[in-house]
Length: 336
Ligand SMILES: Nc1ncnc2c1ncn2[C@@H]1O[C@H](COP(=O)(O)OP(=O)(O)O)[C@@H](O)[C@H]1O
Ligand SMILES: [Mg+2]
Image (tube, rainbow, N blue to C red; front, side):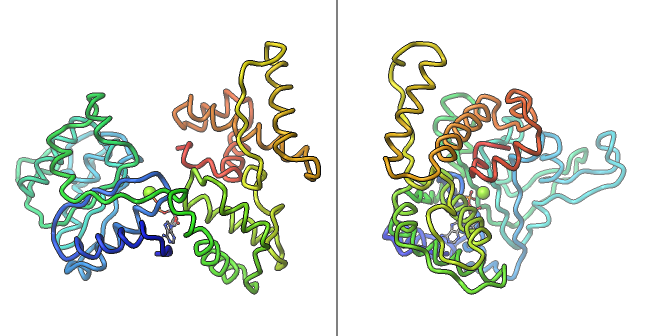
């Protein structure tokens, strides 16, 4: 993992310490901060390194699919269970299981998980035979589980079982000194992948990258560097190879619109954007239009809980177009 900031050194230190134990670890931090990398590192630095490492994204499956994915099922347990199947807990025996997005596990499954954490045992779906496993559990959440408990969505007893060793991954904006190291790392990686010599990053581009807030954290930075390497065609990386909102167009705060209505808002927004861009900015059309477009897509994705088909319909654009824009604007963390 790249990053030499005090905050990241603390992460490495703690990860090394806990790796030697079998304690359950709860990784917290915004999306894109490296939780998955840390989960794997903990496994690889542990005495279980030669055993299996199993990752399950709990947010990607429905309740019943997740249940049979985790615990397995017997033939005939449900309509489509034509064969018996071992679950991921059994597969992780002797190793580590990484439960990603644990916050999205349903209340009912939380009960079953609690039992695995407490007794190391469970039954396959549709079976009465109890199975015992020996696996180390690492879990990650990108929501505050204490809030989820308050909202009645997460069990408090499970939380305390999971939160034996909490490990917080700091957001990139909390450690701006890591940005240039990460840029250098990804420039090297994507240059190699594209068969080009690693280009220089201009001082101006470096400045923008260091002052940007990185809501999507390292994943967002990784995407932008990859895109810039492709656009640069081997030449130096200059600001115009990064999306407009990265290069200095600060988010616009709209107060009470001058002339009221949507038109008033638009004119306020455009004049503020132009001021923020400065008199000598080039490509003002592209910069302002993409700023507005990014904001629009982000807000619609949020109101649609990240469901892309819904958001595409609401926006009146094609699903593939939306998908591409989500990548261009690094809005993956708002989309499912
Ligand atoms: N410190 C780091 N050094 C190098 N790459 C990183 C670092 N943190 C994150 N990444 C990369 O950023 C992306 C997102 O990381 P990931 O572990 O999936 O984040 P999270 O699980 O917190 O959403 C991955 O491609 C990962 O390899
Ligand atoms: Mg992740």
